[in-house]
Length: 319
Image (cartoon, rainbow, N blue to C red; front, side):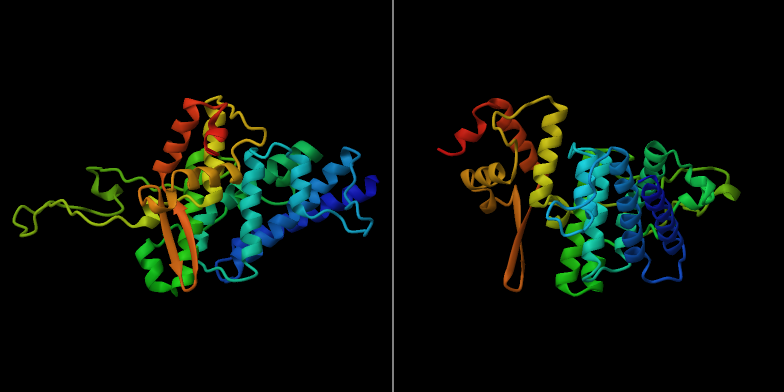
């Protein structure tokens, strides 16, 4: 058994290093897909070794001889579905699965903060579970991933890609934005920020700005229609995740045994006819397919209604 565990850990380290090497080579066009594949493989092997540490089975119960995939392994190790390490891994798995269809290089700017968190989470967990110092296998500086941090605006995405690909990218991007803000944890994402500071020392400046009093262009407030992709960022499952997170932070327990789930959200949407109110929802139509995303105002609306009567909230929606 010890030999099997060691082999799993050794292969896990190799997969982890391969993922980093692929991602940090700018000439490789397949690096997002390659990284997501190898980092998931590294986690699966490492966590299976931890299951063996706990004397738990790593095989499916159907006696097929197949070992557990990453998803059920994560659930066994991180039984709390709100664990930030688990939430991060689930988003990486989602990307890995999506990459079998089509993703573009522009996903990199959005997923890089999740990748960086995933790398550091792995370093911490392999040390915690298996007493392995990963810096004995790869230099510390290689644990910092490099990426292009110039995300396109929604308008640029729509100009660059066909409608179906563009809208899918925008929705994925929005999901990461709202979850990163909501979870606010470096175990889920490590955002890369660029801050601008004004300095009088010209030789220390990256660029120079100046005010021209003779300019014919005056400062003006420009009023424009807001893009629903910016105002309605929450996908259906994101609404559920965010509402549950905020209820937990406020120590509010919903008087329904299954908690705030898809069934309850569907009840709420139907009861208040949310899909016909553009304050709360926006309908996306591409060809014959339609989908909805939701606004921050809907999240606030749901939370406020629950606060009024947590025990009777769900029953009130059935009337």
